[in-house]
Amino acid sequence: MTVKLATRMERLGTETAFEVLVRAKALEAQGKDIIHLEIGEPDFDTPENIVAAGCRALESGWTHYGPAAGQPELKQVIVDYINRSRGTDFRPEQVVVTPGGKPIMFFLILALLEAGDEAIYPDPGFPIYRSMIDFTGAIAVPIPLREEHEFRLDVDELASLITPRTKLLILNSPANPTGGVLERGDIEAIAKLAVEHDILVLADEIYSELLYEGEHISIATMPGMAERTVILDGFSKTYAMTGWRLGYGLFPGDLAAAVSKLMVNSASCTSVAFQQAGIEALTGPQDKVVEFREAFRRRRDLIVNGLNRIPGISCLSPKGAFYVFPNITGVGMPSKPFADLLLEEHGVAALSGTAFGAAGEGYLRLSYATSEENLTKALDRIDAAVKATVG
Image (cartoon, rainbow, N blue to C red; front, side, top):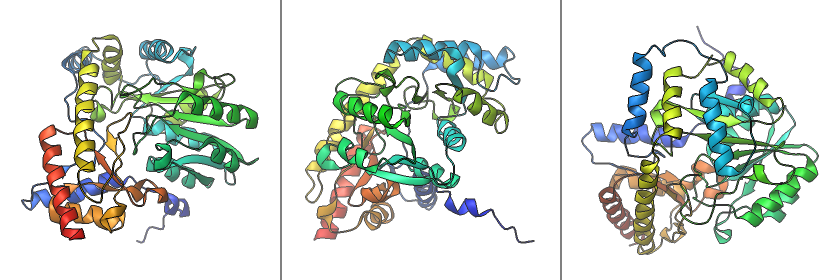
């Protein structure tokens, strides 16, 4: 039997980081030494107090179904944390807990967009944004993030992209893949546009605790934006809990009910035991969060300084997240072939900037969520690759 997939599957993209990881693992299985800079995942273990809370929950019988939108205790803790850290005024009934942060994107876009609607998303940006917009049949409109503007969007350019069909704007600050951070003036101006044109904003704030300079400002705090903002956050990056699959969204109006309905029709609920671990993460000691952030700061400085010493490569210092987005136009190769060369001939798993959109041509994305020893080795190998290429 030949299975014919629905045509909408042709519009669904992927996340290249996982594809490169598979290729890198295959090379490792052949005995090749690979330094992994492709996956956006902290290399730290989940803090012991959080692991212990998850184990206690399992041993105490937290092994059954729970509410689709999340455990009431965790939702209250999330609201307390978000309101305290952002200066917002969310209520527990506005929270939906999901298995990771991606379902928030998936469910919101699925619930909101129809064919012909337009959604503006960052380019370069997290690839699932565009993938899900395309999947719904809506029109994906990229807003370029340029190096000369520190990878912050240009508000005037954003205004020029808005049409009567614009229904959604996606923001990500601190950003994947660039590490760029929107400034207060940017956010104020973007908020005015959203209010003027009655546009919903998905604010992906998953890296909010990984900020090295300045302050994290949520667009939800701007005048008129509480009713127009969905905040996406989670536990994966801040608490090194990627495998726990624990994320959440805070929604205005009736959107939480709509997203809860999609949860009922898909995952039923998020692991109730892991939600207990989430409570511990947000209410327990935060010393590990500080420790992780300072380690990332040291690694950022190491890799940025090292890349800027390599002829043909230049790199801005990111203000947040744990990625660098070096400019490789001086190497003389397009991004994808150069990333392939690094992996196959030099043992460095990196991502082409084009994995994050057409505006990523001429760049690589490197995750510095690995040891300083690995970063130093990777820099040596990248230097050797450039010298071999440029001659």
